[in-house]
Image (tube, rainbow, N blue to C red; front, side, top):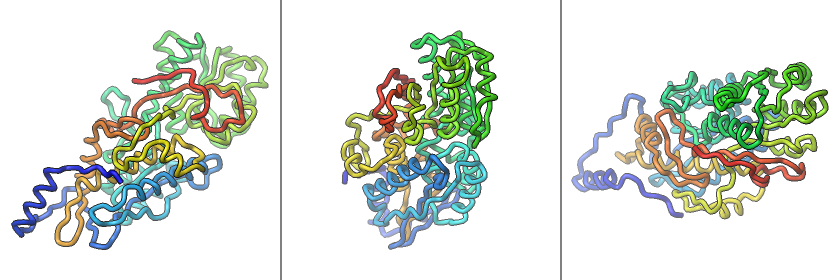
Length: 414
């Protein structure tokens, strides 16, 4: 295993101190520290929507990637890493806050991978932040969780939150440019379900499309679990749009797409879905054919994770059953980034491994040019570490249920 060695100067100082047989006198920062005994494990946790219909495949892929990354990484200063049981967030704010309270109650937990849903992160982030924990998500896109990319924190930003999945503002910009510049659309409608990520994407798209000279002729809302989209579709038909951007989750997205194709006045309207729609379940439905899909770059070529030395082909061979390779690779990189930061700041003293919580946050925040499977990761001051790259795919065949296998119609890079 090609594990990267960090902080050579710090290690040299520790060695020098030990050579003089003097105690280092470790002092915890203001957020406290976790002490791991010799022979005990470093504790981390995952937060996923385990039982929510339509998201089980994504949760399975993320959890498998985390487990594999921990196995590939190996020991941290002679200690194993224990993942424990994943915490079910139910993809909701309440589920996220409750799951975060469970994790925060265990004072031995060092860091968290997740949550997978933005809405769950809205509930979890303030709890985990107050507990001094660092969390890194492989799947959140809501701009509220980090920033507006112009130096202003989002309303749900809390210190200690990071993500390798890119800010949804990039996706909104990509869809706006594709619709306006590539497809020549001038009148667009959009829709959301009130969720942090769907509402954030719909709003950001409307702003970006309008800035290009386009017109947003209708903005509709639905609720999670809705199956009858007739009210929203009637509003759209009355507005006569050229296209509809639907950054919904797969269940609601399927109902909107299938009903729009049969709705009077909307049969020929261009449909562009968001990344949350691009699940195996949605892509496998015949009604999904003919839809454009926006999503983060899933073509990773021969990229190598700098910590473990694994490349795309090696990881794919180890997990042939991955049902969502995109989130799988994001989760692998997120986990190795977290473990690397833990090892970098951990101090061995008196038979215990001291992991300072504030130092861990600072270490992750200082990430620059981390070479991962998904690309080069650099974290900004609000926890955005993703590449910002977005692809627009075209779905013509429901026999293809992996978005990474779809033809790319447009590529966006900030």
